[in-house]
Amino acid sequence: MEETLLCLAVALIAGLLMSRLAKLVNLPAVTAYLIGGLLLGPFCIGALGLSGIGFNSLEQVEGLGIVTQVALGFIAFAIGNEFRVSELKTMGRQAITVGILQAVITTVVVDIALVILHFIAPNVLSLPAAVTLGAIAAATAPAATLMVVRQYKAQGPLTKLLLMVVAIDDAVGLVLFSVSFGIATALQDGRVSVTSIILEPIIEIVLSLLLGVVAGYILNFLERYFHSRSKRMSLSVAFVLLTVGISMSEFEVAGVHIGFSLLLVCMMTGTVFCNICPTSEELMDRMERWTGPVNILFFVLSGAELDLKILSNPLVLLVGIIYIIFRSTGKISGAYLSCRMTKCSESIQKHLGITLLPQAGVALGMAVTAATLADGAMVRSVVLFSVLVYELIGPTLTKRSLIAAGEIKTEGRSSARQMNQPREPIHLH
Image (tube, rainbow, N blue to C red):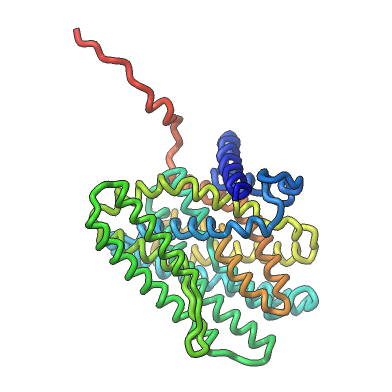
């Protein structure tokens, strides 16, 4: 236990120190945390085997997965705050249309590219793996996007639409992956399972949304009995932890696998709570400050978990580069076309696609499921390679797009240390 606490403390300090260095070269703090994790990981400082300083193995990092899950829960809960009825009336139709179309277009583009690669070089990539990777390409990482928005206090129509689309993307990606993975399994085994392709993903989405609605209403009901800010915030934190815990449970009913999407459950909890609680804005602001250390640990651990051994496999690099090129093409073109269809502003049409490039936890979860394929190791390696690239450059691209759209103002140099210094007394003559 003491070694775990030391590792977490060192990880948090390393992330903070790296963020200071990143500021000197105008990089987002998210990128700094990821690089800090890479340095502490088993391929750098962790390889020295010093107890409590760095992570000695990938298994050790994975053992701290509860921190990652909790952080994702808070991130999804915060994104739920963007789905206020007032915002949905103005941008809801656009967000749903763009969220669905850009994901579908990305899957189709990547599928076409990788299927062609399969027919050119069948020994490099199997057809089931190509189909599965196409669906995984649709997933976008909400964590990096939200952290960039928070760090630079981005505000405007692009930012509002982006956060909504990123949230919707999780549900769309889940359906696309379930259908594609079912097709891939059928191609490999020669049998089609309607249950896994259609029934299970629909049940997962419906149950996740229902659980989120119930949790949101119960949280609002209990919140009325507490009046101090600290107790109300503690109750909100407890409910996020509760929904994360329930979301991780899985079971079977009559041969049908039942599970929940952590992101959808926590997002829906936040959405319901923020729409029915009159003091939700203040609570969300206080929770944002409280979850700062948890979010830093999330990205440092994500960086430590990146497996650099995949860089030594030329086939993985070849498929990975093709995957990244065509996924980026699909996201950018899909966002542009769907934004144009819904008559978004030219600024949103031009910049939204680039902000959707980051990819991380959701895609890695899908890759773990795809490990049952005969070519599952290739799928996981390609996704790991893309996550490595997208997580390191994605936040910077998101920042630049938001600046170009005029939604990040030039940062002024302000110091909390200076702002909290006692003022000179005023003498009245």
